[in-house]
Amino acid sequence: MSIDPAKRLLELGITLPTPANPVAAYVATQRAGDLLFISGQLPRQDDKMLYTGLLGRDVSMQDATACARLCAIHLLAQVQAAVGLNAIKQCVKLTGFVACTPDFVQQPVVMNGASQLLLDVLGEKGRHARSSIGVASLPGNAPVEVEAIFLVS
Image (tube, rainbow, N blue to C red; front, top):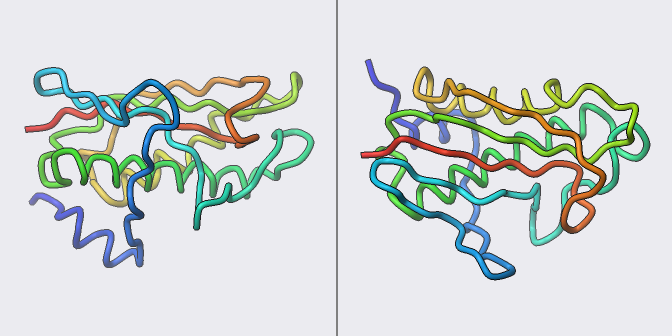
């Protein structure tokens, strides 16, 4: 039985935000055949960053995980705008960037916030390969940025 993403969002109390427009010379989404590439999404809520700073210094694990979850919500908003949520056949890959101090090593734990949200909304179609990368800084002093590749119809 296939999960209806819109119904699952409603059950989870999630309203997709208006997709963010690119702020430089790139596009938010790019389709290549059956693959939909989503540019990195930041944890913005009500036009401001949910939290800012580095993991291991300024941002707690709980807050960073919430940021990753919000990034995944923004990924779904971009998919909805580009092709519609029902077009998703599979989330193929997530790449997460975690702004952190050099000694911080829990990037995969942070990224579970995004991964779990996709599983909650898409079921098995949300299961994906993933990379979690620690970086020195991100745009807007965001603690997390997440990009994705979806297989779509």
